[in-house]
Structures are given as C-alpha cells and as structure tokens.
Amino acid sequence: MLSAQRQRGWTLIETSLAAALAAIVAAIAFPSYEAQIVKTRRADAIGALFRVQMAQERWRANQPRYGSIDEIGAPARSSGGYYALAVTSSSENGYEILASAQGRQDRDADCRHLKLAMRGADLVQASGPDVAAANPDALNRRCWGL
Image (cartoon, rainbow, N blue to C red; front, side):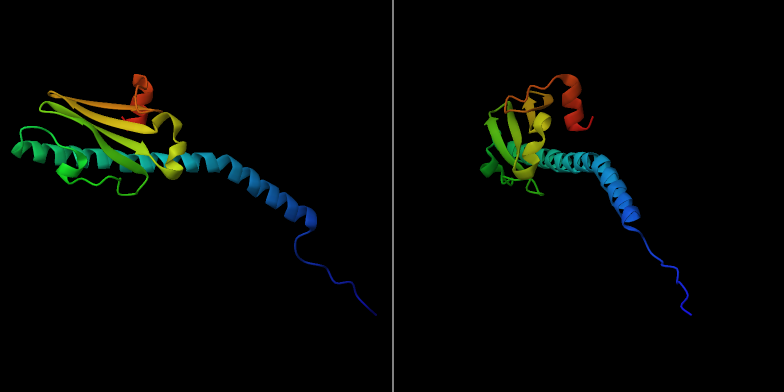
C-alpha cells in the first residue's frame, strides 16, 4: 500500500508573491539609499573645499596674494574623486574655489557645483546646477548640509 507523502516547500505562487514583495520594497528603498550616497559624496566635496581654503590661508600668510590650485599645492580632485577642484579667481583680497561634480555624482542636479568664496573678511558658500552657483538660500543650505 502506497501512502501519500505530504510535499514540503514553497509553491510557485508563494515564491512569486515573495519575489514581488521584495521588488516593491527595493523600489521604495532604492531612491532613499541613492540620495544618501549623493549626500555623502557631497560631504567629501565640502571637506575638500575647506582643505583648499586652509591651503589658501597658509599660502597667503607668506605671499602678497592668494594663489592658484597649483601654487598652494592643493589636489585638483576631492579625496573620493567625485569632484574636480579649481581656484577660479585669486587676488590680494580673496579667492573663489569651485568643486564640480564628476562621473556618477554629476546626477546631483541641484548641487552639481559648490563654491567657496572669500571676499575680504566674508566667507560665502554657494551652490547650483551650473558654475554660476546661484541657488536660492533654502536650496543652498540643503546642498551645504546647513
């Protein structure tokens, strides 16, 4: 006499439902995860801008003016490599440093360019989708993490 053995395991329908549920959760979580990655890379650029600022101040302590990126010995890229750094202007009274997103970070549309400018005794932080870095104040604060 053959007895029917009970089958154990998942049916095709149960497996399909589990896969669909996992796909929905991933679709909801991925944009948030990607936003955090972009924000972390932006923090790398902000740190790099402040390191260039310090190099400018060291240079200016011994020179009659602020210097170019090569003169002050600062790197032309952020430590993570997601931003290119450039001193866009320098004089006796101030300078502007621009960090421009590169590679995958270029998708950070609103904060693609971060600018740190020393104008006399004022330090100005700006951001924007282009090199003009003219975001409104609320968006600028978000880009700089303020």
